[in-house]
Image (cartoon, rainbow over all chains, first blue to last red; front, top):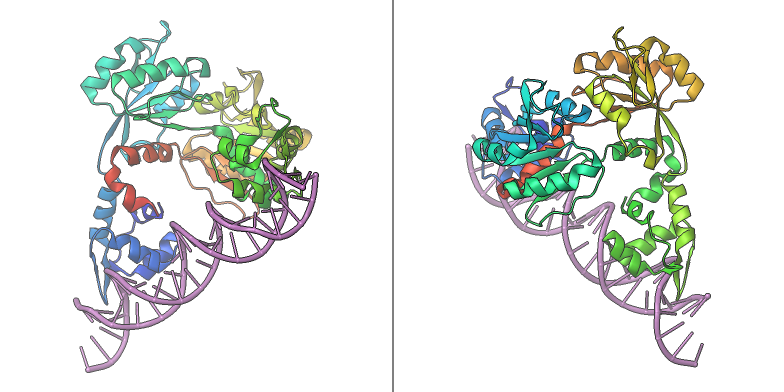
Length: 199
Length: 199
DNA sequence: TAGATTGTTAATCGATTAACAATC
DNA sequence: TAGATTGTTAATCGATTAACAATC
């Protein structure tokens, strides 16, 4: 994953040694060489790695050249925040549709998108070739929405609702638990527990 | 961290063997025994671990018995979503104040809290003994807010703004990059890259 | 050719797991 | 006492790093 930090290499140098790359990424140079050798023999002995070549290869390998159309379900505060989130497009994610079930929300806009009724999900997924769905509904609605998403053919779900989903094993789900992030912070507050929780 | 999954152990059994605990947490029983032995000798040979005792010990050790007052800066969509997020209190986090700088927002309510002007930050931090701040502002405002938070004496920051903060080394910052979560999902979509990114 | 740096093998380190004496 | 299970040591496994022959 540290390879991601090498994608934005400045083009100020033509080539870069594994030693320099390691310094940038904060890892060991042997690790850099080993990992890059996976992609084939793209370094030159005595010289280093071609920066331009390396960058385009990493972008390809890390999936940054592809575009992922994303469907967002739930147009509440969290859904709206995600729809406006500036960070997605950098990594190739584009929210192409926002869904809700509340009649008064349907037809309104969030960011540049018009909220559609969840009943249109299947149609939009097929039309736009959506491969990823984000669930930003209340916990109580999440399972029902997940079932629907699954049936629409989507195979990747990012779940922000604080609930555990039951879904088929061929669908990937990641649950984002925002309080986990806060918890990690508290370990710093009380270093006493650091040791006990290290594993 | 897997220990967290043991906090909610049902009290249906008086005792529980390391084997059973391991099955629940999805780890090796030797690991469970080793980690629990950190806390002292709280198991009984031939019997297992006292469930009630174990649970209260874990709650204590994982910091779940403490209460962390949190200040939230930014009352936009993301801030509002966080203010209403149901998952925080489970883990002992309570958002005690919401701040913004926009005059028209100050005085309005999100959830059960009245939005205060950022100028009141220092006072509230002192009064409520706030130890954690969440930045949910636009990226452009994040650094300025971070400086202010730091000066108020807070030592832990959770940053949702898609920007890297420069702060003193005695302040812990965690950046939540929502697109990282999506990226992890895409590894499933293209298993070809799994290997290359494993390290 | 001499210096530099890769690609890869071997050594090291740390974390996980198996095994078992201690003991309830 | 016999069976079960802990606490801990030793063995294993995997990942990281050092070292060096290959070679630009």
